[in-house]
Length: 304
Image (cartoon, rainbow, N blue to C red; front, side, top):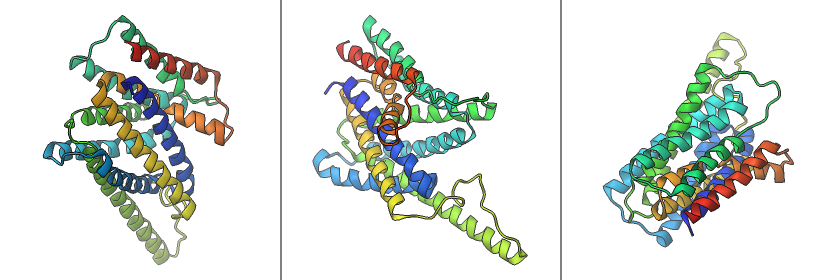
């Protein structure tokens, strides 16, 4: 399968994972959702190891573990900036930066295209912005803090792709296993710290006679506890996320970083399509235009 097709497919799978993650986050909270997804993704990759194979080496484990740390930072910044809003500006900005950072790295590193290829890259970047556009009535201007977080989240996502591109060609899924192991360790540590913090607040409120109130800033204490349905949805989202990572890794080894980075940044497409099909959410005309441009860009990149 051409790298361009793998890039577009990974974006759709990524977006589908985000959709399930969003549904699960409403039930068990975003932190718990990410932690559960890390475990289910790790299990899927371990099961895939006998089929996909891979040489265990310091380079494979090192780059994979580093990408896991970067991925954790990306998730934290992304949730933080989208919580501040407005999503209509911050979402496409994050996606655009996540494409520009590895694309620039790839071009500096020697990725080259014909005229059609460069036109396709430009078309894809426009598609990234249009697809990621989230219509909001009366959206206000984002604060400087929110803009910095959005740029930071996009840069971390882009760096994640760069790190995956550094993994040895014979490492198979080993870097992704290291990625998920580190990501899961980080997220479950955060879950544990938030649980301890919540208990301390409850005990402190009881001793003072006051009724403790959940902290809106953490998004953890205010969310319901683990539920079977929420955990199941989060697990499915984590498995899809790991599958998208695997598609990206295959695409990076079959093609180039520049092509993959731009097409992967179209991940909101999967979220949009699933939201329209399952939740009957309306897709804005500008997003349809973006989806058409994305397919056209992928076709041109495959021909270049």
